[in-house]
Length: 187
Image 1 (cartoon, rainbow, N blue to C red):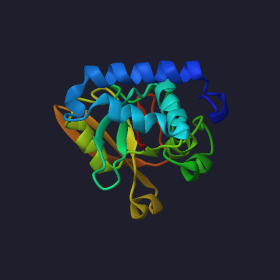
Image 2 (image 1 turned 30 degrees about the vertical axis):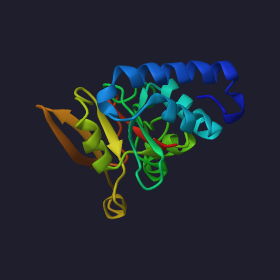
Image 3 (image 1 turned 60 degrees about the vertical axis):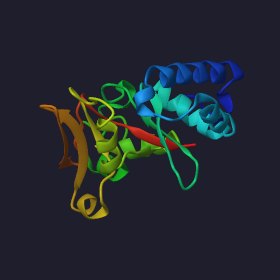
Image 4 (image 1 turned 90 degrees about the horizontal axis):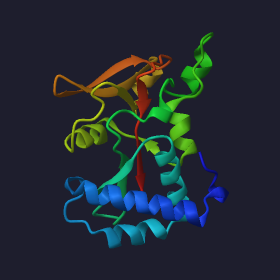
């Protein structure tokens, strides 16, 4: 993952070209939006560009999925067909990671998202993403979990099976090769 001070002009230009190509290839995700307006938002915030570079590098394929009407912020979400490959085999959060006695995963979803300057999708955001196409048909993705569930040791994840979107639970300490997480970022 690039460090904030390490994103070069060349990396920035390559990232923006990638985002523009993805934007143009998937207009159904952001009907009514124009690239120049999105580009202006993206280039006005170097820290957010760094976050997008980290999302891209870990396999997220971020794309614009809407605009927050109250703030004007562009909403970008990981749109890779399956849960991002560079973010799998992780438990839910630090508490879950610390609780594992053996066979600990390399990291936790919440910490990795935070390190990228992004947040896990909420269950509602996850369901909205699934309206844009079939995602996580062979993988699953951790999503933000209500405090009450988390206090009891659980965490939520989502996937798409049988052409239906499921949000379900698992122990927060669990991790699987096919479970990762998706991020959301506002710019």
